[in-house]
Image (cartoon, rainbow, N blue to C red; front, side):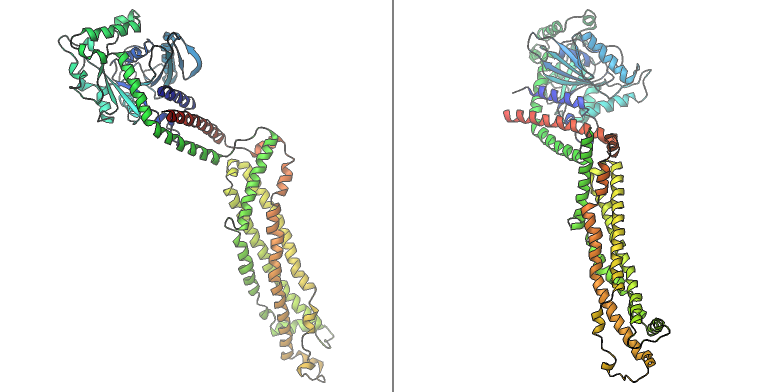
Length: 610
């Protein structure tokens, strides 16, 4: 089975390359879920020397005061014996460093690039991978040393800033704390122990490292600490003997320094019984073994996080929509697909799959009948109005048998008033269709992606509805005009004549203007108008549906599609004017999704091989 630490290292490098470790993302990050080891200690506690002893190389900047001013994420990769050692930086992924003095200089230079040539700090990490046959597979995060006072050139807040930075790393439950304390100082004053106790009060993930044991006052030793009596941790304390400043000045080889360290513990009477679990080499092996065990225990949780994050990423990518095509044909296809999606949603509203289409039926079933009823034809056919129109129609020659022209004028004047409700029905349906267009546009996720296309589609759809409304109004009013221009003769032929009603044909023709006669005319006209009104109540909806609803379903964007086919690639590109921030977000999410899918595959394969 592949070493789990190497797997985690590879995933961490991938996270680093994608920036999948910052708080700017709303989604959980794989980086935060991957176990790591943070090295914590006060300034001049020997942190750098411990790290260099574990690596076996002199590669960290040195100096007085605060030297480590940015977190250093150090990934160690064990190579086969005989392999050449080299280092790589995350910000210089294609450059291999074989000179570790150059590594030291690059760490200092990269720190200065971020903070300037000052003594300020930055929370932006430096990522360094070291490949060597003399290391164990391990990931360590070297953090700036804790301090109690700000020196000249530093802000007054630097003490709190460093503590907050360190705390941000070590308070995460997946972080293993390597607390480094010097043996020649009182453990009660140890900055590393103090802060680790605050975030890990039970010591469940804290390893204590005691440095500078060889520098303790004569007659004193660190046995009580190393045996866990002075301050007990769940894991045994490990003591190390770093190179002296004289050794550093003489460029004493790290491997030779490791041998001297072993000799010190095995030859010093106070520590001889502890020698097997002392030294930087033992520390590296213990941390590697523990880190691998922690990773193994975290695999189920990692799998769960990865699976959930993949679902979240896919969901957000789906919400953001497809990336824009680069060629004219692809752009045209994209525009057409978006328009078809919108058109499909609009049809769903009309067909009842989505709400809104029922409002059109309400126009026909309630609004139109109510408007026709409000016309009150009986008042329009009052006695005075009937007399007025009948006499005016007779002109100078009174009618001899039946007042046909009077009937026509009475009917026409009544039917013409139906145009108002007919137009109102057309306008009401038009308003509903416009509202459904707006709803459909807001419900078309793809249109939210392209503001210009959304405006164009909305304008084209409303323009089509206006053309359909005009045609519908013309056709609907023609129905009314047809009723006015031709009367149904059979209706009047069936009306009883005066003689059949017992009238006296010898009476004067002018007796026919009496009230009874006029009332009968008004009643006949009202019956005819009501008959026509009932017919139009059925035919007007048919006309409106045929001219507006049916046409909207069939050809709402036909004119837009015709114009679209004439556009060039550049013009199509202006319609697909996606927000650059969204484009960048999609690209970032796609890369993260690729990372998580690869991680899913790798971790699943490790889990199955256990």
